[in-house]
Length: 292
Image (cartoon, rainbow, N blue to C red):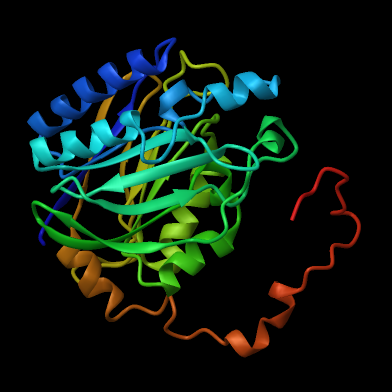
């Protein structure tokens, strides 16, 4: 697999799920015309990242993972011979979840992931958190690639990408809905570098409240034998405007790089990291709204 093209659909949502279905389908078709192998949506595309305070309204705005909205993107993936990572507010008990489903080019569901690190200091306190991180073999027109997913705030925990790397991920898809400023972008750069994984992040454009575009992709290749010193792993950084931004991941080169470089799981000492799984939280990090 010399090249894997991920289309970052940095687009504005509509007022209804029906509008988002139609616009999402149209932009997937445009991504295919641009040569994309995978189309990636921003966070919770089904309703434009809306989390109503009213619990009845919240549940009413959720859609099932096997429902018509999600199924439509599976059918489209098969029609276009292109993988699609569709995001939505998932109908779930006891509370809805912030979820992404990835369909392969045959329209089969390869991966379903619900956000583990919900923003409990904000409106996501009204959502159920996911239980684990998953990796799957994704069949694309260019071949198979091992993918995982993080969603927005998951990025801020090194453990998220680390677990996905340990489970074999080569590429991590990251739907997003927040301002992507230098520090958050630096986190993604670091996650790619330290785990030797490609990372593709799709955000909403600046017209969306509390968002600013700047979708990014990093290929993780910090050193090339033919070049002196380190290189910038950034493949693409979008501006603030709505559009499709294509990230071209050199997968053969990434795989060769992972086979010889020093990061990832090459020299770790997990027996010395026991404190990382301790559940006790001490000051100054105690928060009253923390949920397990």
